[in-house]
Image 1 (cartoon, rainbow, N blue to C red):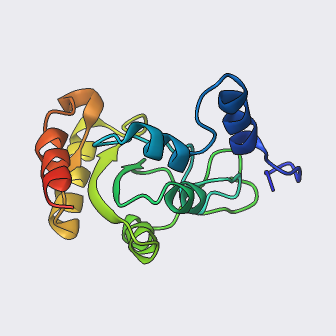
Image 2 (image 1 turned 135 degrees about the horizontal axis):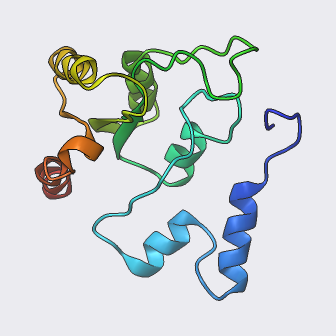
Image 3 (image 1 turned 60 degrees about the horizontal axis):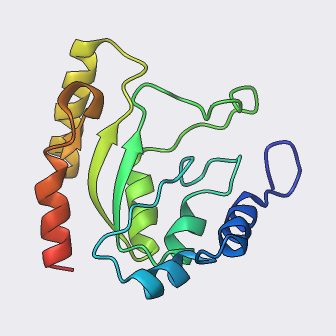
Length: 157
């Protein structure tokens, strides 16, 4: 259910549209037909975002094995759910949920729309130390540091 109480059919509509256009219907159909070395699946919200659908649906329907998680430091509540008190969980607990769904978190990229540059850099360094994972600010640093992580994951599934 969406935040407005209506059933979200976004994923079904998008899949049907691709199918009717002659393309694959599901993520797994695409994988079987194309046999890619790597598929990038973009999520639209946090694992437990009340707006849904979100993380679990993508991880399970795509049989995802590796995740590059996006995190917005200093954001405390899900957007448009502040008045409902929907607090964003810790990065560590989200990574644990990803693991429990059979996927490995490869890196964390930071959405830096909130926060001063010095504070964001300190947060990045602290989080990388705590998680023992690459933590990247892609707007400021680019994504070159992700390439070896992805290559290693592909080479050693």
